[in-house]
Amino acid sequence: MAADVVSYSRLMGADEVGTLNKLKAHRRELIDPAIAGHRGRIVKTTGDGLLVEFASVVDAVACAVAVQRGMVSRNVEEPEDKRIIFRIGINVGDIIIDGDDIFGDGVNVAARLEALCEPGGLCISHTANDQVRDKLALSFADLGEQTVKNIARPVGVFGLAVKDIAALPEEELPPVPETAKSAVAIAPNPRRRAVLFAAAAILAVLVAASILFVRQHRSNPNSNPALPDRPSIAVLPFENMGGDPEQAYFADGMTEDLITDLSKVAGLLVIARNSTFAYKGKAKDIREIAKSLGVRYVLEGSVRRSGAEVRVNAQLIDATTGGHVWADRYDGDMKNVFGLQDKVTRNVVTALAVTLTKEDRERVARRSTENVEAYDLFLKGWQHYLRQTPEDFRAAIDYFKKAVDLDPKYGRAYAALAATHWEVSTRFWDFVVGFKRSHEARVQAEQFLAKAMLDPTPLAHQVASAMLLRTQQHDDAIAEAKRAIASDPNDADGYVALAHALSFTGRANEALEQVERAIRLNPKYPPNYLYQLGLARFGMTRLDDAATSLERAITLNRDDYWSQRLLLATYGLLGRRADAAKLLDAIKGREQRGWLASRDPLTVTASTYSYPFANRADLERFAEGLRKAGVPE
Image 1 (cartoon, one colour):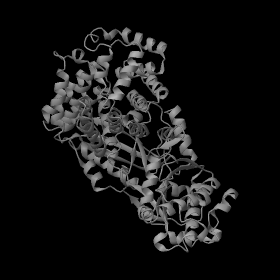
Image 2: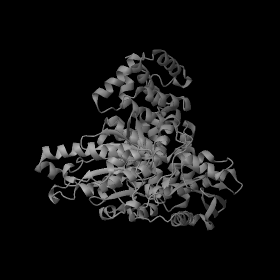
Image 3: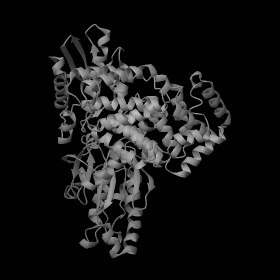
Image 4: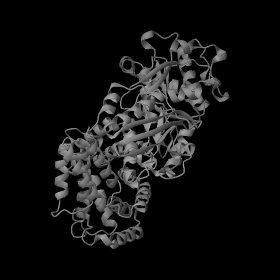
């Protein structure tokens, strides 16, 4: 619940001491008792505001109505120019818990809702309205979806005007717990009350279920996410019905492109490929899958390709009931494969009653190539790229190059070439993949990226961000990551790229928020997300949490170069010398380090060069941790 005082600066300018005294009185006589009486907890004061959580959204709304109704009475005999009037917004959403503090989008949206409501009124999110509409006798007006500052997607808003709050009959007021009745009763003598609690109070009202979700998520990232307040969907891998295993790449590619097209719609929450492909080839229980991924709808289907002919079967399922929303079959040929994808995307969006904005339509309509042969080669290369081995990288590069030979303007293929070459260079796979000169892969990555940026995809922006970060261009790296998110609001990797840049820029708290957003979009996330969690927590000096994340990352990927060195520094700072020694032995004992050791020695100097911290203090802390872990200078 976010509350803001209208014209607070004017009131303070006119009578600073008097206004502050009134604020204290209102905290003491109305605000604090009402919060306590409705089972709320003040998380912290923020100078000009409060942060509060409640045991239920019903309590939260009841408390807000009680405060606003009480203020109507308190202002009756006040001169109009001296009245302190609240705007209040309420949201239910995921939060991040840090000790006793809470933050994240759940809090931020509440603040944005407050700014939308009229003085003395109340605005709540679509999710909050769903939870109170059958429990409280309040008639909120549907204000539609609103675009709000710094929130990627429109927010459904419902409002209750001050005149409606003031006109509520006593019998229709929300029930007040016994402990709060004395606090929220209409004051018999308004002159004895101070005007109002005057800071820009941000009261984030979040239900206990959200808090429990985040607490469980922190200890077990694979716990079931809560449903969001907008349509949510997972696209399961389409089955290859052609009978030819060699055509599996095509069915996978069609699936991934449908995910990509849907994820460009800002009004949807679309689960990332990595999470949905975890179910490939497994027996499907749609309801359990939807529950695990935190979505309401599931799209599944099959692809049959025979020569130039293509048949796509698709069905959209409401996982809360198990019922089919629609099912259809699409026949065409390879020349019209993009048209088939467009039809499926449009039907899903229509079935979910999502309104496409102008930006959505432009993003979905963009095709990086119209050459179906180039597209087919790209899909083959992408299949190899996703396997993330030196051998597959070699094969991926060959396919991507053939694709751009057929279509020299194929931006998506150039972005994939840039990404592959960049990863080869950062992993020191140059010689393994087949390059003759050191750093040749990095040079080619830069050349391919230049071509990719003529028609940039989210991947191109992500690679650009990584390259800029490596050369200490932190602000530009952040800007490129934000462009990746703008071009695909549901691309989890875009949020990871932004988190990476923010962490090294010294904005670890913001980085952690972005990693949490990525994890929501990609619940079955890859190990590198754990590295980003560890990096953000390292920057926040939450070293025990950082160590836990990095240990899990290395368990899942023993060759995780970045997590290994950051974990060594973390162990060093924690004084865990025995654990550091074991990790050092494991790194040195890896067989494939033979040729790598001379190019990338495990030293403090070499390691700090690879971690582009913008702040000298962060870099020195990293170096000191390495030294304490036993890493030579």
